[in-house]
Length: 502
Ligand code: FAD
Image (cartoon, rainbow, N blue to C red; front, side, top):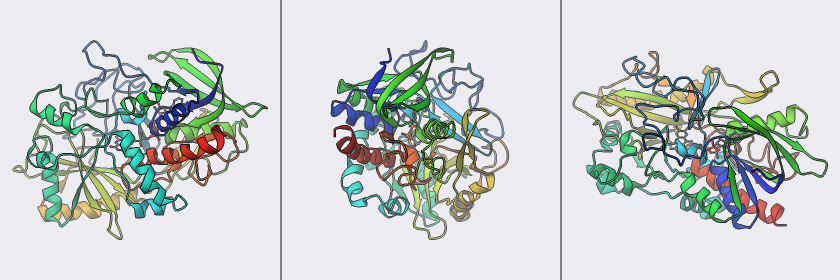
């Protein structure tokens, strides 16, 4: 049962939350984690924890009647999506007008559904986005600590060159090289030795069985196997699942009280509970944390919160596209769901792009080369509290996505020209070649040094901290979880020493 009070409470179980809980637990601080999603450790009737990507069931998505996969169509046919039962599945897609956001729900947050790419940002770009953070410290201490804690590994280059699983990446690399662009290997938290064994046929397949966005049954070092397992191992951390924090109140003595809604996995509310906390850490992700802060500020519970709450949100410049390959350039039906190569054109003065070479895990030859491009889009959205729906609404318009498309187009027009290839127009529900109506990388809403101090302490609310992707001002130039993890490592070290153990 939920205790009445805990010295530390952490909301969420994603990257920022997991780091914070581990370090609190190691310091002997009794810590409660509250997670609205499920613990993914129990096999269903098919003997698997997570459902198959190609025949998804109620385990796939968070309370939807139909799946909402990123590749909406193939040859304009809606082949990827299936009707499902409403249930506390692992992947959510939250809609705000012209933008929707993919999120992981469950113990491990985004680590359950993501592509496992573990990329440390370029130092010059990190210094540009967070100039007040000491980069020597980050690159000397916290990025290495984060990568070690996450279990980052790299693909065996010799194996990469001859395996079947990454033929699709080699085909894209060849096309990029023909246009004069270089590619870079991308580290991962998917176990590449396991992947090799999958291709050899000696272990059950996961990345090679098209598993990724609805969870991986094997091979992935998601947070429940790394940081969270270590946090529980300290004996001081407890996780309560299907517990959604709705409100944050402050008591006259300065402690926080949380209003928490407990549900079952079919969405029936079981109880509304309260828990007190001396130190409260928000790790509910860019959307979750920003909404909790906005609701607290604008309903008058925490009126001192800064006007900066809700500001500085971005998509990390995400845009997806496909190219049609020549008939002789087959990518193969066996494709690793875990990307490990990217086209690195970040040095382009006008249109910096880091484009990860993504699989099309359809289990058959599609003649598609797919990419998730990360671009330097300067546009920012803003969240506002909407009293009628008691939720945070994002303002982001389609034209704010245009800089991402312009940058991706500049790169891929050149690649198409050099290879006499064309874009695919059949993948995103209509005829558009570029899809930027969703993001995998929501960042910002409680930006470091603006809504918080330089270590994530929320301005106007003593003993309240932000630990997650909300701290990053809309862009990291690469896939963001290593940056989120490293910043959390940095901030919690300071907060433990100066605030918690003081
Ligand atoms: P999250 O990981 O989002 O965790 C927040 C947690 O809080 C969730 O579990 C949520 O259920 C819970 N929560 C929210 N609100 C509440 C509440 N009110 N009460 C209780 N619990 C709550 N990044 C990479 O670096 N590499 C990749 O390859 C990559 N691929 C991706 C692929 C997909 C499909 C997606 C969706 C994301 C991908 N990302 C990738 C992005 C990465 O997963 C996120 O940046 C990261 O998970 C964000 O971490 P976080 O700590 O901010 O919060």
